[in-house]
Amino acid sequence: MTKRREHSKSERGQMLAVVAVSAVALIAMGAFAMDVGAWIRTHRATQSVADASALAGAQALPVKSSDATELAGSYSGKNGGGLTEIRFESRTFPQDTIFIGAERTSPGFLSRVLGIASVSVKADAAARAYNMGSAKYVGPFAVWEGHPYVRGSAACPCLGDNFVTTIELDSGRPSLGAFKIINVDGSRGGLGQSTLSDWILKGLDAYMGPGWYYSDPGAKYNPDQIEDAVEARIGSEILVPVYRSVREQGAGYEYDVIGWIAFHILAFTKRGANGALTGYFTSAPWEGIPTESAQNYFGAKVIKLIG
Image 1 (cartoon, rainbow, N blue to C red):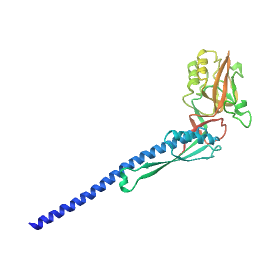
Image 2: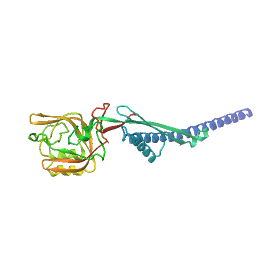
Image 3: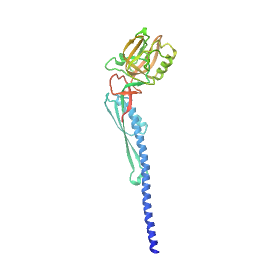
Image 4: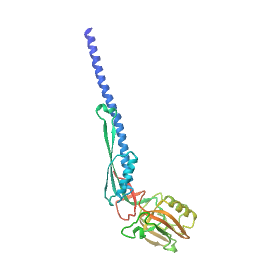
């Protein structure tokens, strides 16, 4: 009986030791798992800041890397900071791609029992400014590429409020009633005032590619609905198609659209059957489908994360 009792006590002692060791291991694993979860959240936050900082910086590209650096740093600073690197590469255009490196320290709490006081969490991101292969939310006004501030010299497009100018919305072919309003949806014939005013206010809710587009015939500037729509856009940018040449097709009139340019509207003048927009061309990020081509770039660009 004595031997059995001693054997039973020994087994209980061994079990207690195993349970104690297992409990410590489980607590350590649980502590480590909790801290790993916190580190993952810190990495996600760091990655989000890196991505958003890259996108913010890319708004100033291509070329203006100093502005891009300032934008990326400013965005990061307002959202917890952590940027460790900002650099640029040239792909289609000079300095059209920005690379961001970010790092934050995430403390260990329960994992300190394992000797882990903190970890460094890193994230990388890259964004690029592309030329537009197709554009969305395009307004119906046509601009000739030979406009002095569009392609009037080797230094153009001339962008910014130092180059205030006008877009003349007059008719080159009065007999056809073409007043530089394009059916940006690819249709032919006259459209209603509601459709045109909606395009002016919001742009075409579809992608518009380069190619031949018909003029919307008739004197469209007299109705109040069109004038009201244009005046509602004063102080904002409208994306408009740039055309290279025109042609007559029977009773129709077409514009060869080769790209798009953003125009900041300052004023609208109605002159009976025609009119004029006063403002300036500007560099603007826009929704569209990017292209690797540098041809027919007029300052409107597609910004995308590439890494």
